[in-house]
Amino acid sequence: MTTTLDSASSTGETKRLGGAPIAGSRAFGVLLALTGAAGLLAAWVITLDEFKLLQNPHFTPSCSLNPVVSCGSVMQSDQAHVFGFSNPMLGLATYPVVIGIGLAILAGAKHQRWYWLGLQAGTLFGVGFITWLQFESLYRIHALCLWCCLAWVATVIMFWYTVSHNVRHGVIPAPRWMRSFFTDFTWILPTLHLAIIGLLILTNWWSFWTS
Image (tube, rainbow, N blue to C red; front, side, top):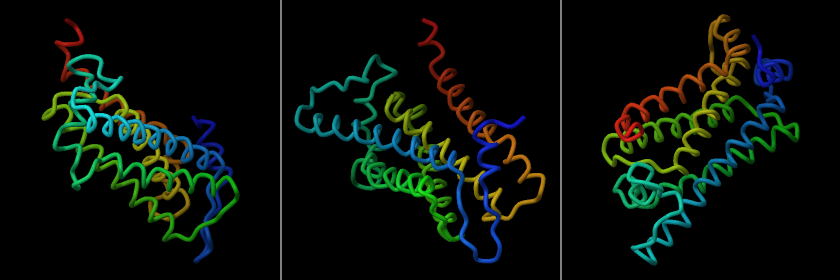
């Protein structure tokens, strides 16, 4: 079975010969632009709410709905300032880069292998960082931020489709069966990844959801 996105990606791919630049499909460009925009929106809203919290310690973010879905609790935690500044600042700096890459692909840009490896490294860092944040939210802070969840979804999707692009184009060496898998079934991996996150959230607060 081949999805529209994967089919378009397969059709539009340009095989790498030597050091020739590699193009991405229009579908991949759209996906990067949309997921980058979603992540940027989340980072922007969280940043605005954090400024309001600094001005007024009693401010309640609009996404603080109950003891579990409590953006304020997450924003005021130590984990929300891992590098000495607010985590969303990273999103404000990096998600626009993803948007720019997506728009460049739509404009017909081709890039060298090192460029695609750089994108892969960036998305790998992103998905690793949000995985740690997910653990902290569920098992240390015991609260969820809806805008953070939007950033999680966007980052997971852009990571797996970047892996797919790089495997299929030979940027990341892989056996034929793996290239074939990513051509036809890329959607399985982000779907499974997000389903696991959803299951962990559901089971962690099962008593709350069912009470």
